[in-house]
Length: 244
Image (cartoon, rainbow, N blue to C red; front, side, top):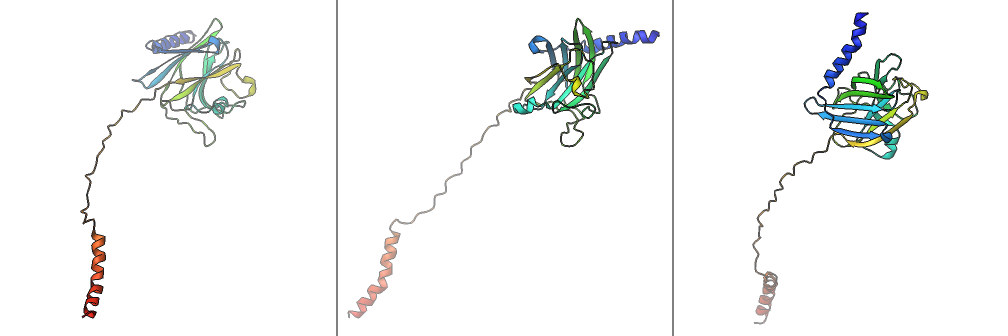
């Protein structure tokens, strides 16, 4: 009983220690300010750190897309690497599942839940009608995305370039396993972002080399005339002998 009472306190202190050194350098808002996001990237750990604050007490969804494509791809909920997480209002415990979401308006769980959870939740709480989540994810994982063979699972590797944040939430339902249309989000959207800038490659010097011109030796310009004259010499000799 004593251990049971101390466990939540221990976990709370542990999460505080883990997040103590995280300084979020980026911030944005979605859904008219109802969904707030902070994030940063740590080169030393090769890890992205995120914090979400949403005006909802149900499940909270956050993720990233592949490198930015056409609108029809983005709006079709195709290949989103996402975390669905939250806090059970009934007992205060935390839940979270790592998804590769494929196509909208269909069941995503358990078929598209990754075998390994690469979204690591470090802090989760509910306060004044809001859910606050802090979590992190490696830039590159050992579970690369697989969209060609069923079941389609895995993680999007975060590389330089344009992509989008994926956000969603349900106001009241706490359900990490989105196994049916009944658990569909109340609100959702996309927001373009560059998580890692594309570094311009240093321009390599261009070396222009020229080969020396080779001039062919030209003969006299009147060679054709001389050849024609020489061709008539035998004929002239014949005429000369006949004239004797």
